[in-house]
Image 1 (spheres, one colour):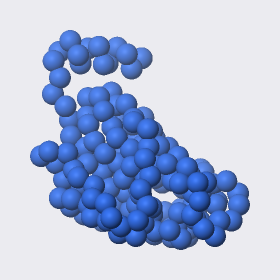
Image 2: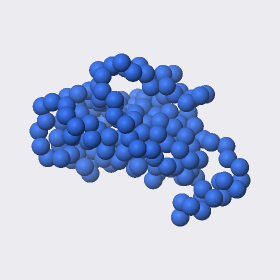
Image 3: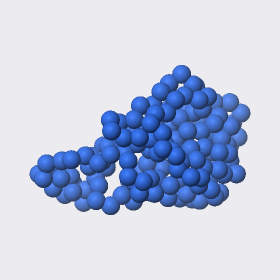
Image 4: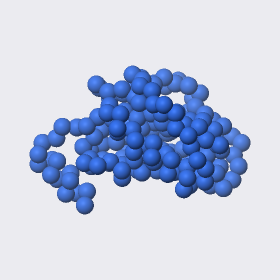
Length: 167
């Protein structure tokens, strides 16, 4: 994965926190991982397809998820329920959508988000890629965003069609 490809995601996280959650985030140093193993978190996952393929995973400790979704909808949550699961899915969708708008030279589509809770899972990266994980801190708690992305080689006709359908 090209390190510059993480910048749209970092910018999107900062935008979401400033505009939707009314607070700032601090970005830590990105780390390269070959695979992601489970921890007792809530993870929002969304797939990317088009001229680049990938996966975005928003990893939140439970307390952070409760605070973030609570701030988003204007209420306090004490336990994980369907509102928290839906909220985490919406957050990863908004972050990926914001990053998608910042990519130059790529036509990217988003899948529907999925949310995983618990520690018995393993997120596999795409072949010949690695996860790039960026830790964040905020007044709502710490969290991380992991991205696995690779450009797709397309035939000239497909590339022309993808670029014309973007308009």
